[in-house]
Length: 218
Length: 218
Image 1: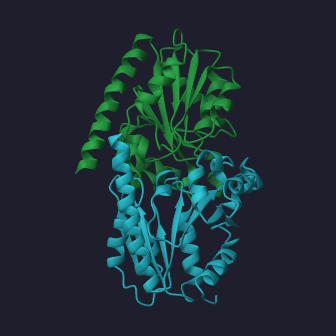
Image 2 (image 1 turned 180 degrees about the horizontal axis):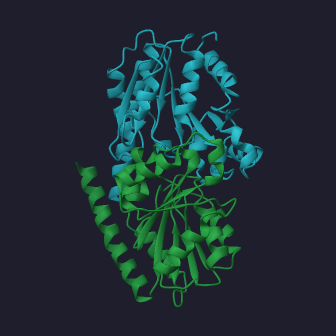
């Protein structure tokens, strides 16, 4: 029982800080995304294709979350956008206080879109509000079409589903339509995009939708 | 501080039950594996190929861990081996007490190999001893070659690395040799196999190694 009490307190404290983050972002007119997925589903690759496509149209900043290393922040920094790396040192998800500290290291004035790339984990990040406008869950075609049923919380709490690696469809047994309908059965409100970071397919549609959400013309 | 204290207590309690599980398995002469990976790396598919290959040679039982659904236990049960599903209902990893309860539901006499398939999560299961002889981490070629650096604990705590989905190598940017050397840099003691569940490549080598470990002729 004590563990459950502590966990509830941790979540309540997290939600309070997330609320403050959300207010700070709103004051600056920043649309913030929380990108979540299994390790290796392609969050950073999608982010790289997004930066190529929209960084000339809109000022973007990035917060990278990883258990270890700053590899992802270095990948992103090559695109000339402000990027802060959070290293959780074993922690399996980002929490609102880590994002608050990262926000303190960013010049927020003028930024329109903030992309927070969470730790690769399809379970734990689903419970932690970071202050984002919405969560984007990335599922790759190689992971199999049963993942929404097996990891429902993440799909339930996201607003956008990006089905990535569609270039690999000819070589895998996954049924992409089954993946999408399994996800929509859990969360009918999901907006779904299908992308390939190798061919670039679908990246424009996702970016155009995002720019419209942020009130920016692409 | 209180959270850390509680976590330490949880881990100590877990280790105590894991110790009891290990003693129970030893009494029955059972070699137990704890299979861990990202969601969708192919743990269940490898298990299916293993059952096809070795279930005639050696009595096997399976414990399936999932956040939700009994899809995997149903997949495994088709092979005619005893299988118990643990549904964690949101929990991000198996714990020793869940495995203890699952063991109580299996007829252990005569079983030689027990395969425990953990929840798909490359972070949290690394800390929880279940009483297994060793951990097997599965990394698929589609996840990218940087995963050992980004999720080091899992690779450090495993004895075997299975690099799966090698049939997809012509279609992905991953460098399989870099993946292997990144893993060995973290844990030089890893025994590495390279497999494809689509073509069957590498499955025999892995099964032969496992049968030898279990003291069974393949």
